[in-house]
Length: 464
Ligand code: ADP
Image 1: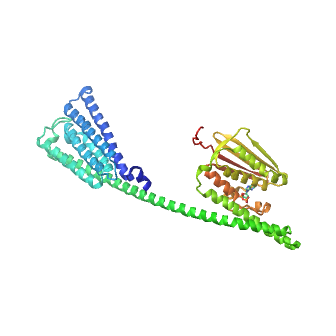
Image 2: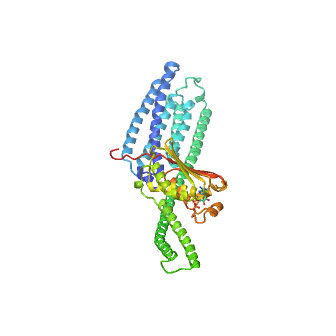
Image 3: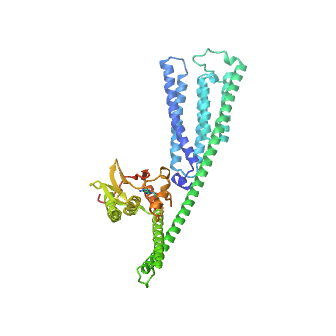
């Protein structure tokens, strides 16, 4: 809510009023020009006998008072503050002045016989958009008085009646019942249109107000959620940090036991220690993965991002996993472009992304299998594929495997110690960079993970 108010100092509904006042001024330029042009055409080209001079004078007068309105509008806009009173007054004044101009136009084009009486409908619609319901009633009341006075003066001959050029002269104004009926009909239309249009605009305004309030509440709720999320992340970060060192020291103490540095151990004791060691290693892995995940959640500044060559990162990761692959007799191949592929990213996060995918491929592929890493540029994006001919994934699990702690049954058979967090980390990194990941897999045949990272526009660096 505050954000919007800060931009202009106004609520959206008030901004709308300012915009509409300017819009009415623009509309009036068009109306006055159209009036002047059509009067000239009707008189000089169609040669119809109309009151050319008064009509041209009215057109010019509309232009003149519109200039005054424009000046007032610009002045009020310059002194724009939380007070929109000047705009309300300007809107009311514009509508009232237009009614007077319209009454004169109607008079010079045939009184209530004139086709221009239908312009009342447009005018009432414009008023209902601009003004409050009460002001609309006042304005239509004012127009009613003007129309009654005009008809009365016309009927009584106080002002000379101007006949419509293409209607037979006389007749209508001699019949008081006809004049009264037409006037009543016109007034009924005016008030009905006013009632209908104001009902709609009042409802729309109420809804807009409701939406505005809702938006404010949503923003508040969202920021509270963010706060809770941050507190949760901080808590998790603290806990995992605290757990890491004692777990590591338990692990090394157990190694001392296993290796006999703390006295002779029986085979039975050794087996128990090995089991404990496995558990501690799993816990340490879990803590490390949770730590990475929490760090990714943190809204860390993007200062850690730099222009990096992703092919170099892939080579580093492949080299670090080569021994593991060789140990399993897996053929680890790469197809990496010899040209550098630059992206704007955090090198550590990219390493995390690639190592999780490659480690999984090695982990879930049987000995003597194949794992391949490919990277290329696609349009302005970087596309990387990690494929293997391992155990594969059931189609129904394609979406589930990216969820926290999810592990498929066939994966659990192959590797008992997985945390189920690797692909969650992968997804989180990609989300952070606006990237996407896709998985293709056939059970027993292998899997292919393909991700795309959008090219980041590099911020301007000094001397670049
Ligand atoms: P973890 O490997 O620790 O189980 P991940 O989040 O990395 O956790 O993977 C989640 C699940 O996705 C795995 O348990 C496994 O079922 C499946 N998965 C991931 N990569 C592969 C792969 N290359 N081949 C087969 N299954 C895979």
